[in-house]
Image (cartoon, rainbow, N blue to C red; front, side):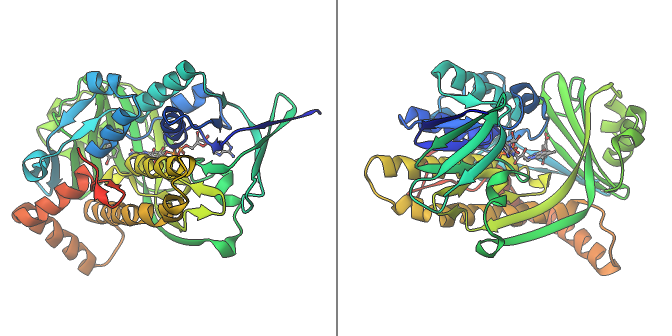
Length: 402
Ligand code: FAD
Ligand code: PHB
């Protein structure tokens, strides 16, 4: 086995949205980076995940020069609906906050970023095996990996850990240097993707006696729908027929009448978890996106947080390479964590209000009271809307213009 050595400024581990977007933002600043991804590009593109973008995320993608298709094909939504025991309430996002959300799948963002990277000629290595971090705590870190049986080593100034919850970067840090916070929820989400013109104009979140359901979409011809399911369930237990029957039951009339159960083109079960690691910086290694935090999908914040993390990280690296010093690198963790904890709070709150939990009568009354308060109080609706459209990204202490 031969060994080859190269050098770059930043090694990015992971080619999910965090890694690809960071690569694109750095490339536009003239900062060299190599992306190392464990899977194939097709595998990464085949993962069906998030679909809702905050206005701030759209702004960052625009800033990165990858928003042309997003603007052409993304769907702007000015509200979302919450259903609870026969009551329906539209949260007027635009009227309450002046902002909206954009429906555009994570798969499409990933494709746009991959295309931009190929066009720029910047290097990415897919199917990189045994990615290993060396000397991340020293001034000259290195990252090694194996490709086609050949071991490569890249010397760099910084490592960006964009490798998701199960990645190697956080796992390389001794446990005594990390503080982690976690909550695991006692259910999962069964998600189905199907080709069908959405019979709903905006997203509908339903808390029914049978459990949570969400009616979402990816385009004018494709829907994404979810139902809360037991954690132990397997996808094979859920035929399309069973899924659509359950979805209709939970959504209630009007929608149930209009849903013709189209065949699923993807079906998967995701567990729900809240997780944060502190800090996000370990010597010369910086964590971003799901490598640093997980939110339950109820608030649609996972992808948006990944985007804000890498926006802050690219600014900090830009300052370093423009000889503006280390201050932004030193502040990276604190800056991200402020936003991360607020998104964690909101996702936890949405999850608590909208799911059926095994629990006592007091908790059920609290959930009921909370939702009724939300439906009746313009102040509560404004608070929800403000969080759903996304809290503003800060730029060096001031809000980023939108
Ligand atoms: P990831 O997308 O996980 O990307 C990390 C990348 O690193 C992957 O490509 C992985 O293959 C690679 N990698 C891992 N280990 C290594 C290694 N050792 N070496 C090299 N590469 C490595 N959010 C929402 O807002 N709404 C949703 O509906 C939603 N659904 C989700 C469903 C699932 C099953 C999951 C897992 C997440 C979901 N999310 C959702 C969250 C959202 O998709 C994530 O927040 C987002 O993908 C984070 O992007 P990331 O780039 O940080 O991480
Ligand atoms: C999705 O479309 O996949 C989606 C939308 C909103 C959420 C979660 C997932 O809160």
